[in-house]
Length: 356
Image (cartoon, rainbow, N blue to C red; front, top):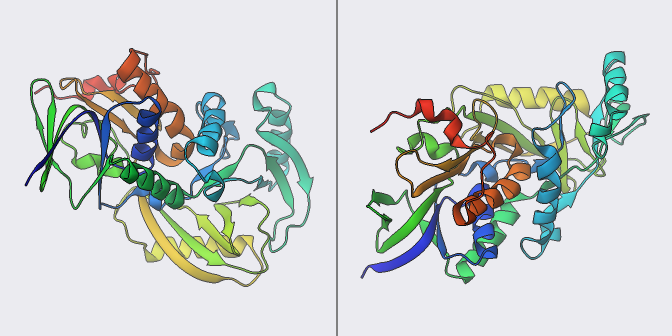
């Protein structure tokens, strides 16, 4: 027997983007269903770090002034038990030479960096080789596995989540979209695609210039390493509890598969050995593919032809920070006619669309 549902919105994908968008729909008391698949999720492989800076040139992350505070408030109140997945941690960035010290001092004196750049210091940190640091404010991480599982549990309790073995079939009609999977048939007025890196196989939005990035990380254990800070040198060391630490991530734009490589493992171990001087045990390696974009900004908006198809994707390595603010903006755009920021609106790439 086929179960038939009618909803105003169907969210396709329940990783970080789809989970957060689902929370926004609940908060607005909207009629929706979320569909998840068993395809790999980039967010379950990610570190979950939130950090307001780009250290390569010591600049602020794009849009951080408006998205970071919103994100922190969102994670602390969006679902129950936030203390089990949302962690505020100070970050210490290695400062390696006089040029970096001078640049830090100049930037930290600018009003634009208030709340982000802290003082420079020379200090020993248990287990770490380096002793010169720049302090960064408003940093921490979200345990994305715990967060997403909590959202899924809430959705299941409200009968708002359908888990599919594979991608469901989609048929576009004049005024709605039919989504079918086994014994379930859903008629939705709008479909919100949150399919992460799998968007490259999405026939409606694969015209957009994604530039997927593979990242490899490792988890290690050390009883002698300080757990009080996030440490950044080449990569990040993030304390995740019980003397466990996450380290990474690498960047690779070719050979995009979900498995670790010898090259990636070697690079991670080389950089870890350069940073710490205490014994450690490797617990796990993992690899994921991030839905990054050519201009490093999200892809949000409505399909050029099919006006009941929408996308919320391309959040990349800053997804933890960007997703709460822009999911809210998308919902306001769909329900109240609000404008999308031009920097994220997919209309900026209309020239890439091959009209049917």
